[in-house]
Amino acid sequence: MDESLTWFEVAQRPIYTVSELTQRIKDILEERFPFIWVEGEISNLRAPLSGHCYFTLKDESSQIRAVIFRNQQRLLPFKLENGLKVICQGRISVYEVRGEYQILVDTIEPKGLGALQLAFEQLKQRLEREGLFDASLKKTIPYLPQRLAVITSPTGAAIRDFLKILSRRFANVEVFIYPVRVQGEGADTEIATAIYDLNQMNNIDVIILARGGGSLEDLWAFNQERVARAIFQSSIPVISAIGHEVDFTIADFVADLRAPTPSAAAELVVRRKDELTSRIQDMGYRLREAILKTIASHRDCTHNLDKRLIDPKKRLDDLRIRLDDIMGDIKTRTSQIFINKRNEMQIMIHKLFYYSPEKAIERHASYLLRLKRELSLLISKYLKLIREQLDKEMKQLHALSPLAILERGYSIARTLPDLKIITDVSSVSVGDSIHVKLAKGEIISKVEKKHG
Image (cartoon, rainbow, N blue to C red):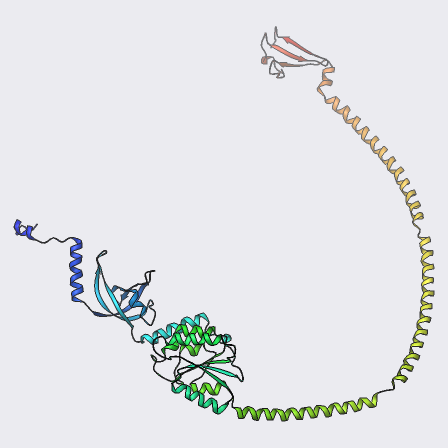
């Protein structure tokens, strides 16, 4: 405590709670910065189930938290992404629970690239990744469609130019006009609905989306995802004829064919009738010439064949004579074959008798009997040899046996009860019992006296 301050002055010094101080700071910031513009790069973007978007705005050295609530976020024509540089308009506020200040964003604009252009690029990249622009999935435009459906504004200049060129090229083509709004709020819904409705009709060959030129905002209905998916899902081929040649929309990338203008679409979708008529006449002339040439060629071929044609009766007589010759030859050959086979069979019978298995069995039986006698003799000799060898070894074993030594009058003395052989008098004492093994029988005796 500062000693220069009196007790009264210390007692009068204001002391804030955390909540009070946070509230004071919040009041000052919200009063000082009611509406501000902030430029930065979006990072740490997250969007919970509530629909609000929370993110951080940062530059090279600082950052600040920001939030745009669901109602304002829905109005954005583009999608927020990490790394996107933006300019935000909003107000400073303090989130009292954590004591953090943040920007409550009302509107966001991309820096450099316009909001609509950014939304266009984002949707284009996403649909391209999904395969909606894949050239292999695009449908072929019919060579000569019978009925066209044009989705456009019935009062625009685009439909008048389209019909004028179409009537000049091929007046017989039937045109069905589906009136829609081609710009403004709800125009994309009407265009997508028109595509779906036309797909329910069975007599439409081609659908054409037509609109005159205009700014990016004017053409924005054709940059909507709803229209792109309706074109992609259409079973009828779709031609986009939107704006001028330099104008590109999402519908142009998804459509099966892009025409630079509505007038160009009329030239692409149907051929010139006079050209087709001239081509048909030319093809008819060429076909007539080819038919006449073919008939003449076949006539010459028939004439040549007629000259080569032989009387069938004469041909049959020749075949009958040839058949008789063949039958005689077959009979001669068959008889010779029978004779040859009979001779071969006689030879085989003689061979079979010579190589009869009975003689072979007799020879092998005699040989087997001789082997049996020789085997019996060899076994007898071998057993005699083994028996003599066994007797010799038994005699040698008996000569070395301790029992043979005992038969010569020797005995084996062992201590009791451990039965250790006594080889020295010092291993027993007077009065010890000993076990004596004789050649025949055993003796249990007691030591009464011992000598050194």
